[in-house]
Amino acid sequence: MSPSLALICMALVIGCSAETLIFQDDFKTLDFRVWRHEITMSGGGNWEFEWYVNNRSNSYVKNSTLYIMPTMTEDAIGMTTLQSGDVNIWGGSPADACTGNQFYGCERNAAASGNVINPVRSARLRTADTFKFKYGRVEVRAKLPRGDWLWPAIWMLPNYNSYGGWPASGEIDIMESRGNAPSYPAGGNNQFASTLHWGPDWANNKYPLTHKEYNNPTSLADDFHVYGLYWSKDRLYTYFDTPSNIVLDVDMTKISFWQRGNFPTNFNNPWAGAGLNAPFDQEFYFTLNVACGGTSGYFPDGVGGKPWSDTDQHSVDSFWNNRGAWQPTWSGEDAALKIDYIKVWSLDNAAEE
Image (cartoon, rainbow, N blue to C red; front, side):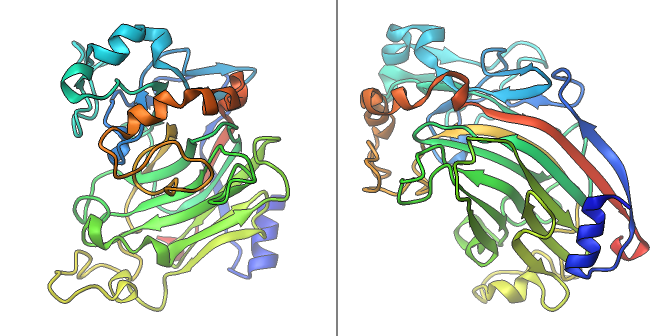
């Protein structure tokens, strides 16, 4: 029995079962058969300020570590195009096709919109077409970025949206953090959160009921740590460094998520006829990314010197025009999310099916 499994069995009293390693990436190389880049300026549905590209300046492997590295768009397209040009990323082949057209994700015109083109370039990689699973244990060893208004995440999305569009089919956020200094009042790079998103529509997303934050004594950008997930039919929890150090813990044996959410009666239950753990009873895939800014409230207005307002139609301009304040906090590769490895074990127990 592995040390990690022994800790699970002894400390959490969940009943020991064998585990089988079903996925492992030690990032000796960036394997494009496994990791597919999202190519879009859509801003993740939050009007974030990054442009996701497939470029070795923003996603690359070095010393058996995956780097997701934010850079300045100006360096790639020039200041004139950034401020007044048109950027078209529809693509002409399957390998370079734009992956998200929502929110003007495939073409933006700075002059027409009155806003600069997304001023930060970054990467978002996923395994939607290459690896997905239902139930198992995940460990991701990572070092988080340091830099104001960066938004790193290690998370999972449903492969088929079996219960409908987001968030009806669920979302599992193993780790979500901010690159700001630990003194940042909303939680800086010494803090991360684990969250489940679920609900019949985006306005009734009950994630606050399945959300927990973890505060580390030191910055998570100082060293590598393990961000773990245990996911069975009956229980889902995340952990930090060791399985006994639980962050978010969700018991899925007593009530359904429909009952848990206490939703308005005018909604139909999207999980009717499914088990108590629906929508977290389907196959999910991995997503790794570093976002920047946005207007969703993840970086609250009026907190920590935030240089833009979520209600400002020109928030991205305010962010860019104040780069003298935040850009110096991005110190080379210190601003990158670094992934040492990802491992997934199946739970070899009929009770987990």
